[in-house]
Length: 452
Length: 88
Image (cartoon, rainbow over all chains, first blue to last red; front, side, top):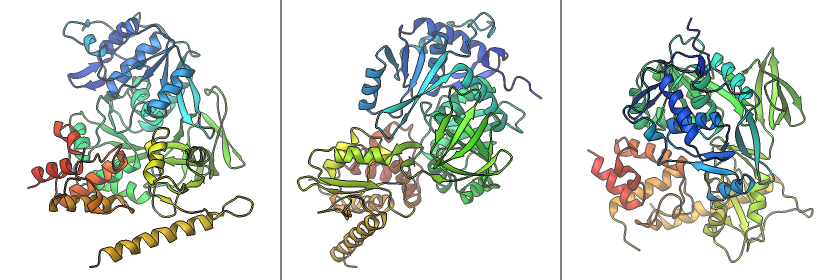
C-alpha cells in the first residue's frame, strides 16, 4: 500500500508529480521551490484575492500565500460589486489573476534546481492555527458571510476526504475539474486533494464535452473527473467518448440515480457523490448508482434541529447550523430530505430568496414584486413584478449588477398586481396559479400568431 | 435592425426552444446583439445546453480552445456562421 498517498506535500518524494501544466508535469520538488520563491515576491498584504482561472496558478499562488502568512479570499462570485464590497471589508489586500505575470517566470529553463529535494528546509512548517483562507457564502442579509479556514482544519478535513475519495485506488490519481478552484467544491477536490491526498491535478478547466474528453486524454491513468450534475448530464448526452476514467466525483446538487447509473455503465467508471458546504467542507459521501443514503465522514457529528442540522467537528473552528433537513438512518448514515424554504441552491451557488426579493423591491420604480421558483423540472427562478414604468429588461438589468447570474429570474412578467391577502402575505398556491395563467396566455398568443 | 437570414432564423428557433425562452420570438433575436451577458442575457448553463442542442442538431462538437469559439458564441450571426462552417 502506498503510504505516500495521504501525506501532506512536504512528506512526499520530490519526484512525485503534483500538477500538469501546459509545458508538462511539475513534481513536488520543483513545486515547493517555486512556491517558496513566489512567496518572497508577493505584494506585502494580509489578504489576497486569488482569482486565477488557471488551476495550476491558483494552486501555486495559494501555497505561496500560505508560506508568506497571507490569507486567501475566495469570493462567492466574480461580480465587480462583490469584489468591491469585499475590498472595503478587507482593505489590506491585493489580487492575483490571469493573465499571470509572476508564476511563468518561476519555471523558465534553468530557473529551478532540478535536483533539489522537497520539504525539509525549503518551506517552514505551517502552524495549525494559521488562517489560510476565507470562503464567502451568500447570506439572507445580503452581505457575504465569511467562513474561516485554518491550516489545521484544511489538513485534517482533506486527509479524511482523501480516505473516501481515493479508496480502492492503488496508484496516484490524475484529476481534472470542470468547476472553478475558488468555489469550495473545486477548492477541496482539485486543490486540497493534491496538497494533502497525493493526487496530481491538471491546470485546465474544460467546458464543452469535447474539451473535457481531450483534457482527460492528456492525463495519465488513473484519471478522476471532478464535476457537477449539469455538466455531467451534458457530457453524457453529447455522445462523446472519454478515455478510461477511474472515478467521477460529483457535487453541488443532488445527482439523479438514473444519471449516475448511465454514467457508470457508459463510461465504465464509478461515480462518487459528495455532500458538503462552504462552512464545513466535505461532509458525506455516497455512490448514487447504488445508494440513497449518505455515509457521514467520521470527523463530524450531526444534531437534528428545527428546520436544519447542527454540524460539529473537532477540527472546525466552530459548530455550524446547516439549513438542510435530514433523517438519520443508521450509524453515521443519513438521508437528505430537502432544504429549508428560504435557501436556494442553483448550479452549486447558495442564495436566499429573502435576499433576492429584498433587492427586487429596492429597484426604483418597482411597487411590488416577487421572485420565486416555479414548479416543474426547472432550476431557474421566475418573477412577477408591478412596475408601471419599467420593462422586464430593466428589472433584470438592475439585478444583474448585484446577484450571480444563476439567480437572475427568467421569465420576468409585468403584472398589474400580486395576489396578496389582506395581511400582505401571499399564498404559494395563488402565486403559482397566477404565474401559470400568464404562461398559458402567452403560449396561446404565440399559437394564434403562428398558425400551422 | 439587421435582417435575419433563413439559417439564422432556424438557429434562433433552436435557441428559443432548447432554452425555453418563453416571451421572445425567433424573429426578435437581433443577429448582431450579444447573446451572453447583455443583450439576450444568456449564462453559462445556457451555453452548455445550447452546445448540446447544436451537437444534436448539426452533428458537430464545439471546442472552446478553438480561438474562434469565444467569438462564435458572441451573437446569433457569429454562432450560425461558426456552426455552418463546421458542419459536414
